[in-house]
Image 1 (tube, rainbow, N blue to C red):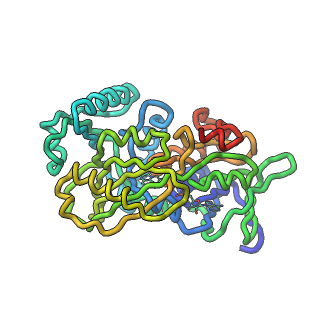
Image 2: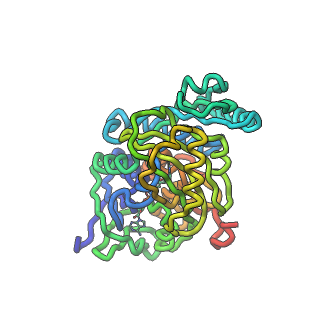
Image 3: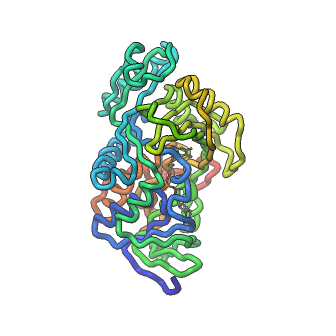
Length: 385
Ligand SMILES: Cc1cc2nc3c(=O)[nH]c(=O)nc-3n(C[C@H](O)[C@H](O)[C@H](O)COP(=O)(O)OP(=O)(O)OC[C@H]3O[C@@H](n4cnc5c(N)ncnc54)[C@H](O)[C@@H]3O)c2cc1C
């Protein structure tokens, strides 16, 4: 690219969120260019798991977005299901003690009132759902709406199917603004892309991109490790996790937290998560984190003690201080829309996000108040408190 290109919408970021934004914007009849400094799914999308969950969300705006997203994922699966390894397998949350089960059942009752299907599972019925679970668990809750995709495949296929033009290896160094502050495109070292709408789908780097538009957004990295086993025949039917995972997700602590999350994949390996800690963009392998993951998983599924782990990888969840993403137009920079900061739920929430962003662009303004990008103080230090 040497001269400038023109389109209706520039999407910055070719991860899961950017792909979904491109898909829904293209379906709304808009001419879309997606630009990424790396390859497709080279950011957090290529370093996470692909759970599409309502089970871990408390009633509120994130759960509403998850319910919308899950129904859109099911629609997408009709077109792309096989390619993206969509599996509506359901989730099973288990409690190790009666006290934890009490809390889990109260949480599930609130979710049911908000439209989630959450079916209590007494201890003696757990083995019927997951025959290889450890004995002695107090009980659980089954969430039939939870599903799974393979994130990198989902992003790549959705981008391709959207028909958007894709520019990889082009870093956006500046978001272009006219004298009156209106956004009119982006600059890369290889030329300019002109459009009346620019979408910030830069994930964990969404704060950096915002700064390149002259506005602030306090996105921080929240590191997570995943442990990957050797390929196995299907032995784990659902996404299975311990009830304390929900508290870890909602925690504001920067310290290491781990709670077992276990799932099989179409290709055979079992994925074991989930750790959370705020240590900047440090990729150093953390043995305490990985050991805690292995110990937690074998507590839930004792057979895993005899299975080899092949590798581990880390990614950086895009974390905003109130655990909600930034979605929608930025009143501080007309023409700029944000679609980032989805933390550990960006695969699941991508479809709803892309859908809402496309509606906002065509003027069918949804209520995006809880996700307003300008809801944080301009001083990032204050936002982090
Ligand atoms: C261990 C782990 C497990 C996870 N498990 C799940 C899960 O089970 N379910 C779930 O829903 N979520 C999960 N997540 C979270 C999920 O992976 C993220 O929320 C999601 O991938 C974010 O996608 P994104 O498209 O917004 O960002 P990214 O995938 O990071 O994409 C952003 C893109 O923007 C590009 N970019 C940045 N700056 C620029 C620039 N200046 N110019 C051009 N390009 C730029 C980057 O190169 C990158 O490709 C997990 C995350 C981790 C770390």
